[in-house]
Length: 90
Image (tube, rainbow, N blue to C red; front, side, top):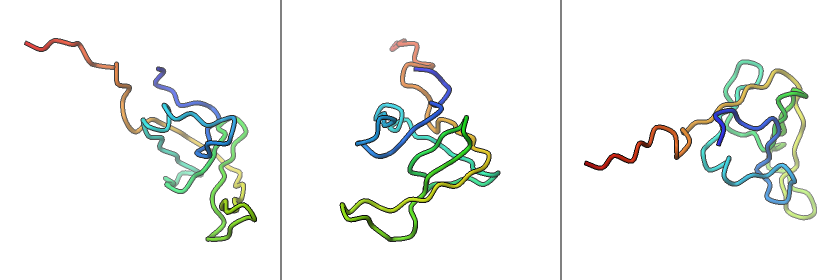
C-alpha cells in the first residue's frame, strides 16, 4: 500500500469512494491550515471537504453535510502494516 492517501475518500460505506483498508490506517486532514477530525469526505485535487451540519439528519437518518472549499492536506496517521517489518524473530 502506498504512503500517499487517496485523492478522494469517504467514510460512508455506500459511497464509491469508500475504502475500509485506507480508513483503518487512519487519515489525518488539515483544512485551511487547521487539523480537522470531523471530515466525512474529502477531495484534495478539487479542494473541498464535507462535514456534518450540526445534528441535522435527512429522511433516511444520515447526517446532513455541507461542502467547504479550501486547501486540503491528507496524511496517514499509522504506517502501513508491511512497512518496516523485517520478520526477524530471533
